[in-house]
Length: 179
Image 1: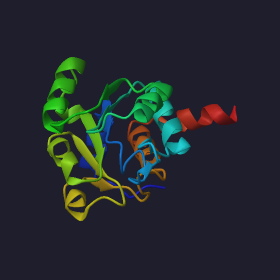
Image 2: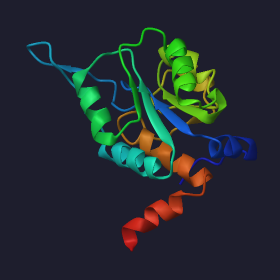
Image 3: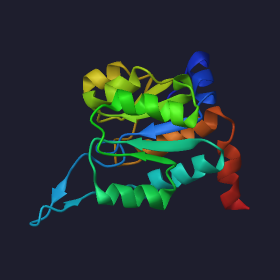
Image 4: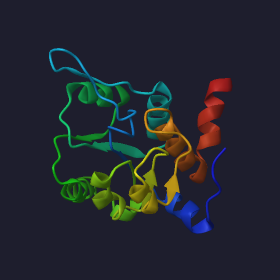
């Protein structure tokens, strides 16, 4: 189900209290569909969305840090109950520090999922950096785990399931659907 992790990496996942996500290339495939009026259309994966909702039920918070200011992302974040939505961010490292201060969650208790070099300032400072399968190779070098799935195609669900598995909450979360 998952790529095996060392005991040290399992422990890091057990300590996660906040999952932070990039958008383009992580929650989406990184493709931008631009209409004639300049409207940007993005496709989000429903498996990712449900994984985020399940993770919330275990007490783990979620956040988005994105450089874009996109109404579609704001709408999706609200639909999913994302706890913290930071958009239009020019400096992700600064936004990460502010988020940690605001939530009073230590950097080592945060996981981040990224795909491109703009994500490295957070990935190199958080407790558990993830890269999606289609991430830039340099980003993968800085990840503790690279998903089997690509961004926009279930990578975030893989991450949420992996966190819940390490925290021993996945079985109970899944069992709710077979009662």
